[in-house]
Image (cartoon, rainbow, N blue to C red):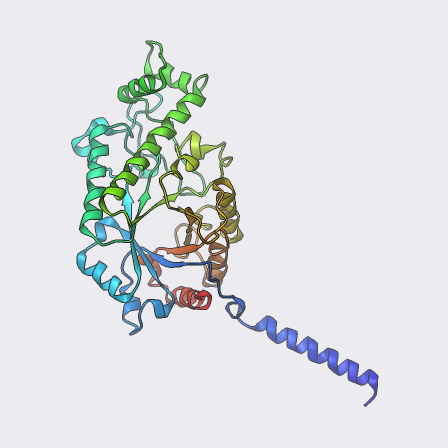
Length: 373
């Protein structure tokens, strides 16, 4: 065999090897990620996984998130016996039933009238003292009754429907209570004119002061939640599920509309669980959007994902279908981008509908087991 023939055969062998590698399943190329400490599921007890005669950690899952209303002593004990962490999700500003007996807690719009619920998402006036006490009391009860590892704030924003491609975010709340508290706390005198004129003033000439005050009101709730944890279950983490936008998306709506001041809340929060639901938020073919938003959050808050940092980022990513569907072929990409630094944990949304899509569940388990240190 001549040297020329040998070179041809060698080239063909290399090409064949590269072809075989390209045909390998992508998950075979996923590396271990020791920086990822949390591999979670959101949405309740995954009983379907428990029936597989393996522990959740053996399946790669080490954390379960569930609504505080779904907690029971039996469920917490069962999950703890499995060797996983249990975190509760806590609804702060979206308990709509409260309005049945307390209609004065409904947010008021720019016209001085009760603002309709956008897309059915009913918020509550953040300065209503009775509602605030009601939520703080329930927050304290959950921490006292259940041996949870942490509790996550949810719906902690103004009256709005933003979990969609085209958000609806009306300006609120312009009730007499809010207007009086604004004047008292900012030492500002507002003119004696109809509410509609005051709303125009606060969204115009006084906008900067109004926006900051609204953010401060919501941040003060977080301060009180932190104080309750410190007094009741100090080892528990305080997390927050929050809007995945940057500070410039939708004309700065994160602060201007939703009253979310991430930097201010960082004084009290331990973990930021950004919600980059790529399919729901009109990025169905762009899972990289997940890591772009997480990277922005890390830069914004100065979080790198390094060992020893107090603040952490654990995104909640979309695997179940909500609006746009998430194909099984995307599962690995979604989890890949959800576990890139500065993220040090991840959870999938949401078990209630996901468990029926066993192909996605299998792909999730394979990814979690592969990245597990």
